[in-house]
Image 1 (spheres, helix red, strand yellow):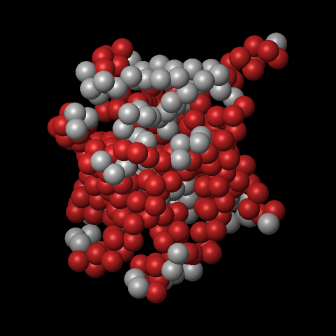
Image 2: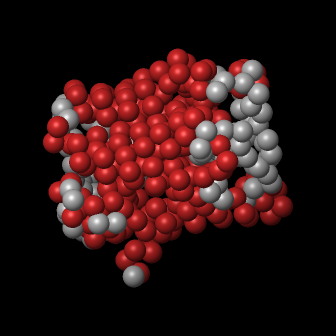
Length: 192
Length: 138
């Protein structure tokens, strides 16, 4: 009984386990009197780093958001626990069609690897390809989420659950942006 | 200190869930944008369906927060420019890094050190938005 439980824990979790758990996390934060939204932490961290001195967007009482930083710290710890104690280092089981598309760029899923190490590694950062995927990609995440007033957690999960029109438009735009890059730009980037 | 503990616990649950469901994997995001698998749509879709039901239950029964205060979901003021342009820009970054802000933190916990550089880049992006925001359509 126990060993089969451990075996189950170590396997990747299906969508119908993860999705409901994400909803539980969102609803728990609402019952705590807060709103689920990770990208607010980016603004908070800029504020802590002294951004308020040069820009009024970061000049606010960030301590109100202290709970969200603790939540983000929990994310790091949770990632560590799952990686160290709840994993048997299986390959990510992506669809065969996806694997074939990636193979045409010489990218292959490897054991204990969440992202393609061919692209995402420190020595690639200074190449054009690595710079675009890692540094420019991160920049666009930070710029876009704050411009759009939220990310996947704030808009796609919380906002859609609250049936907000703004969040529906934001979520459609997230996907439109991702599809544009994946289908029209990434074929060139992966060949760099 | 104790009042922060519950946020840490919920954060740990979230970090474990997104790791175990491989939501933090670039491969899964790439696969999602290729429409090759249902996995990511199932994760987001079932979260939203249960979220809608949960929020309706909260509203119908007028459920209060643990502190006894009324639950208020801040309405987001609708605007075409802000959510279209901002959303597209985030979508570009989402596809490239394969991560949204939550997974960036979870990746660090998984020992993906290069995610630290993505977070620093995201902070620079946020800072640049702060500098430019008065000149951008909202």
